[in-house]
Image (cartoon, rainbow, N blue to C red; front, side):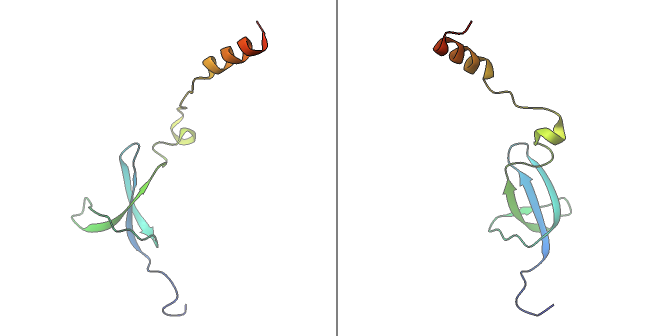
Length: 81
């Protein structure tokens, strides 16, 4: 690899903000926030909205929206029973 053109590849903690799940891995992502990990070291912290802990595909749980209310409104609007 050429020197000076590649981003730094280092240990980074990714934290799922919806489930408070965190994992340590290597990445080139940059962050101003840091977190103290279980081993006592400080690592850059990258917050994510979805991880394997909160994604419906991996957890088997789906967040159900108000579909019944939408169906009722549709039926009232178009006069269906």
